[in-house]
Figure 1 (cartoon, one colour):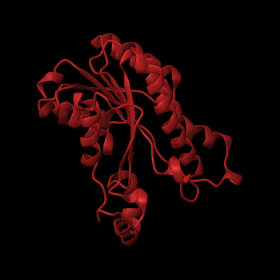
Figure 2 (cartoon, rainbow, N blue to C red):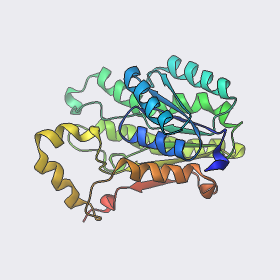
Figure 3 (cartoon, rainbow, N blue to C red):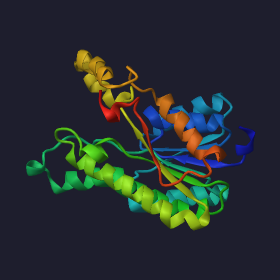
Figure 4 (cartoon, rainbow, N blue to C red):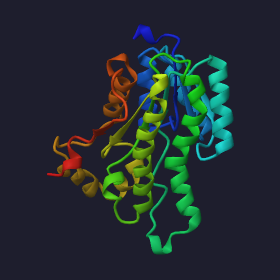
Length: 254
């Protein structure tokens, strides 16, 4: 959309999966897109893909679990463009599985840092530049695990995502006076490399997941990207502190 020309969107964890589709969709919407990741080669390839499509994009590599790295790089991005209009805190992950009895403190801290600290670090650093944006917004990712507390060994993942749900609402309260909206999406089972291992080793299990989804199929990264495009748009100008389930009805069970 032409009215987004000159506007800047930052997407963390954008070198693959859902994050790349989100970056591509925002680029198609007219934003200048800044992709973040930790795989520099993949980042360069992704930027080339986008620029070949006529999208203005750049890659900035940094680890979202590092306070210093996030703060310095988001600040540099904001200073370069003079604004940030959209921050998508897409980076995150399961981090592995561990029952609490055997869980190391390092593992606990890593999963919390990857999913929750990263949202805090990036949002805090972006706020001064979001204040200079137009219809500025932050979009976070929570998960059904935030309500169900996760599957076997994923309890700390669920805990971290419950934190994202709470910080989304807390940021929305805190930033409303500046007109900065903060929402979250909660993707269900999306067909991405996140599930590549089980898809390769147990294809029948992977295929059966669709049976637990009302709409009878797994989600695609584009399904998430479309909702984020909406949340970033003026059509969503009166929506804040909300979490949108993107799971084909999976959260209700069948």
